[in-house]
Image (cartoon, rainbow, N blue to C red; front, side, top):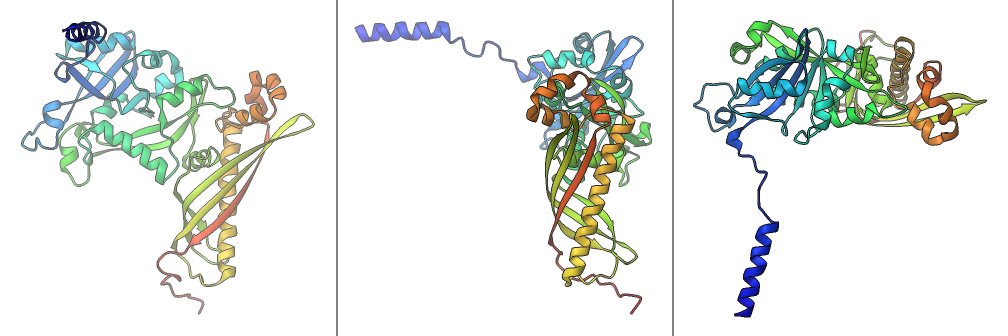
Length: 400
C-alpha cells in the first residue's frame, strides 16, 4: 500500500513538471510557407508568400485539379507587420519553419539587406537553412507566382535548381540565410548572392499553360553572382568571373570547361571531377600578396578536333592547355573584382588574419583597400584522370 501511494505521488509530480505538448501547433491551423519574397514599394515592403495547399500537394491527390501551392501577398511598413497582415487574406497563420527559398528584388539589395532581413534573423520559428537569391530586373512576387513543370512546388524547384547548378556547373552560389548572417559580421570576406532572371511571357507563366506546354512560355534562370559590400549590392559578375569566385573559395565540386586544341582547329571539353583550393598569404616588406593553389582532377569529356589520345605527348599538351586556361579564367576573375568592386569576396583577409594577426590588427578597418591593390598569383595543378569510353575521337584528320 505504501508503495502504491508513493507511485501515485510520483506520477502526480511528473504530471505537474511534464505538461506535454503545451506549445503544439496543429497542421490544420497553419499555412506552411515554402517560399518568401520581399519587394521594395512606396509603402514599405511587398511581402509575398508561397504556401503549400495541403489538400493538393500530396502526390496521391491526383484527382484534384487545383495547384499544389498558393501565392498571397500584402504591403506594410515592416516585414513582420506584412506577415501578420496576411491573416486578413488567409484563415491560417503563416508558418515559416519549412521555407526553401527567399527572394528579394534588386532595389532592396542595393539599399541594404540587414534591415528587411532582421525579422528572419530573429524569428524563433524560422530555420535559417533556406537559400537566398536576388531577382534581377523583376520582382520577387512574379518569381514566386510562376508555375514550374518539373516540381509540383515551385519554391522547391527554385531551391533544387540553384543547388544543382552550383554542384554541376559552378557559376552560381547557393547561399543559406545562416551563411549571410555570418558574413555580415565577418572580417576579411564580403558576401555574395546569386541572381535570378525570369525569361519569357510573364502572364502565361502564371497560368497552367506554363506546365502544360512542352516549351514553357516562362522560365527562370540563375545568372551571375552579385557582389556585396557589407549588406549592399554593388554589382554583378559574369559567368566566367562567377566560376572563378567558386574556384578560389573552394566551392567547385564539378563543372566543365572548353579549351582550344593544341596546334589544331577546334576545342576539347574537360569535365572537372574534383577541385581543391589552398590560399597562401604572404608578406614582403609589410606589403601583402597571396598565391592561390588549385589542384584539379578531370576527365576528357568531349573532343572536337583530331587528337591522338594514345600519345602521352598529346595528353600532356592537353593537361598544360587546360591548366593555363583555368589559371587565366581565375586570374581574370580576381582582377575583375579588384578593379570594378574593390572588395574581398574570396576570403583572403581571413587567411591574413589567421597567419599575421599583428598586421591584421592594423589592416582590418581598411582591408578592402589593401585587397584592391594586392598581387595575387594563381597556380593550377591539373591532372587528367580518364579519356571516356572511347580513346580517340571518331574524326578524320583533314590534313591526312
